[in-house]
Every structure is written in structure tokens, then in C-alpha cells.
Length: 129
Image 1 (cartoon, rainbow, N blue to C red):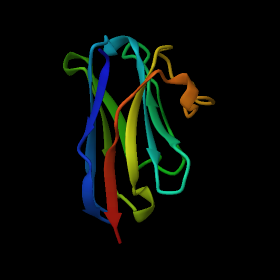
Image 2 (image 1 turned 180 degrees about the vertical axis):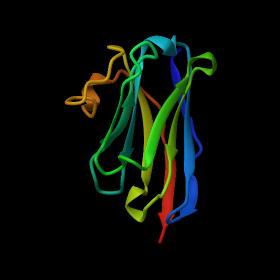
Image 3 (image 1 turned 90 degrees about the vertical axis):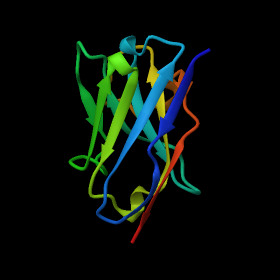
């Protein structure tokens, strides 16, 4: 059974940092691109970042997080990370990871939810001002 489990969320002050983890089981994560999405109350789920398979290595970020967030992967641990620095109150949301079986992120479409086949349950990130 495929499972993605996010962790690392919490409450942090504006300007602080958090590192989210997305641990996979039941699939060979090496062959998947992994996206991070977030959904704030009353808003649609939006793409935050995407990381391609290691042999390609490309990453993409939403303009709103570029320069502050970094995604990385550790295939041996079957885990993908989202390092979030200089957090702002507008980053408050539930953060989800998801797998893209195409394996390669494309800048023009990485944010499209329909490309992803497996989703985690989400982890809450709250940034206080």
C-alpha cells in the first residue's frame, strides 16, 4: 500500500524556519518527481515546489517562496524535504506532498494537481506575526 507521510509542521514566529519531511512507503520514490502543495483556509490548493528524480535534479518553486524555500531528496531514506526559511504569516497553510509518476518536473505544469497520483494527509504550518 502506497503511503506518503508529511511531518515537521508546527507553530513558528514570522522570520523563523521549519523543515518538512515527506516519507514514502510502498513505492520506489527514486522514480517519482515529488511536489509540495499547500492549502490555506478558504483558498485552493497551490503548488509550492517540485523536485525531479535525482538523475535529472531539476527543481521549481512558486514565485511566492522562491529564495526562501528549498526542496531536496534522500532516496536512501525514501524521503523528500522542504526547508522553509524566513517564514511569513501568509505561508500559513496545510502542506501536502505528492508524487508525479512522470519523474520530471516541468516549470509550466508542476503546479497542476492532476499530474500527481499519490498524496499525503498534510501537515499544518502556522506562522504568527
